[in-house]
Image 1 (cartoon, rainbow, N blue to C red):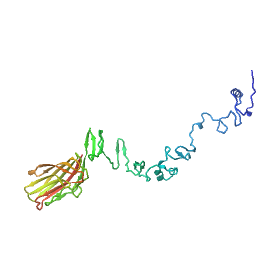
Image 2 (image 1 turned 180 degrees about the vertical axis):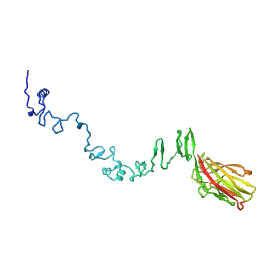
Image 3 (image 1 turned 60 degrees about the horizontal axis):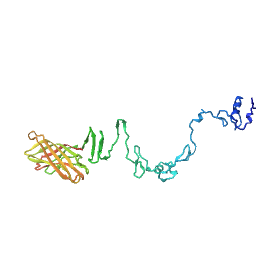
Image 4 (image 1 turned 90 degrees about the vertical axis):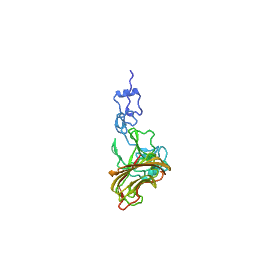
Length: 350
């Protein structure tokens, strides 16, 4: 049997072969103290080996060294030098690294002025962002019931071709709020004005008996009347005549009388209650618009209780602003005669 002399490991300068390793391990010699030895002890020293389950092999450590790519500077605190290889706005790296917020916003295409609390960022149409958009109120509550503690604005849009149940929109054609409820399109009814004090008129001149804003008449904006839109005017009042007279009631848009009715009284009346109701429906919109108007007058005197109705189709320019007005006129207007409007309301449908 061949035998081998076990070398002095302390003098070895190169790693040993497989057979020699086995024999050395069997001989109990497993260590060498020189730096280039094959066998090293486990530990944390500069000449020690590291075990496979050592925590230092899996723990996280902060990066260091020079940054590259879209970053500049050094880790662990590099700065953004560019985005996807492009410097926004063609500015230098010093601007992006600046501590001045306004300069940094300008560098990346955002308006130089900071936004206010609750504002949103919108496009400026030229590739940048604006921080001066209309403020958006926060929503309160929780889904499905949310509240908005402020003003909600609906931008005018065309009616959807196929509306979905529950949708509501500001219709740009009808110029009113619309909705789709219960499987059918609905048109909103809103109050435009309500009179807050009596309006009393006397004499023979044509005079206003409706004063929703305190000055007489109600101003309607341009293009307000669209096809199908309806105005409803209701007036409750009181009539006193010193003798026989004729009272003419007129509903007017601007200078045009769209419907009127005259009531002849054969004698004096005292404090006769009356209700006047007029409806104006737009049939054709535009510069040569057409409307259909009706007027109903109810008198409370038992002996003369009547319901009167009159219709008229008038053509007028509905693209212009109009003043809605209701007037009365007496023929005789003897002393003590007066027409008093106690309540007046103007509604719009559709």
